[in-house]
Length: 116
Image 1: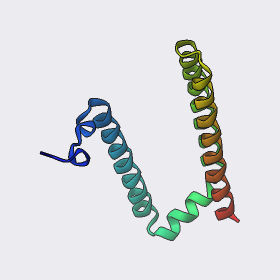
Image 2: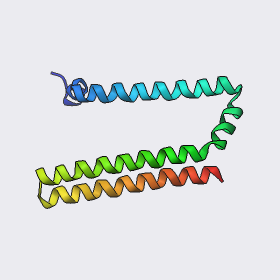
Image 3: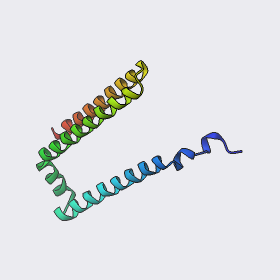
């Protein structure tokens, strides 16, 4: 008999498969973009300098991305609360929202500290 921890049925779930596929594709695209930038600009230092020179555009991109995620979150939150109107659902959503805001604050804070 196979132990429970060795059974990986969750890994063969279609949703998990799509998530793994998209994560892998995003990782491959990110690596390809970095390698292309290094090759075009001639060196890692040139690529880093180019990224520093264009950091304002990257900030604008991240802010637009965060705004899109916030809009999607509010849409999803409304649907979850309509489907599960209980107090537990509300508390669970509050915890996830706090964790998300803290994670974004830490991420942006670390980027800010790196730039100084």
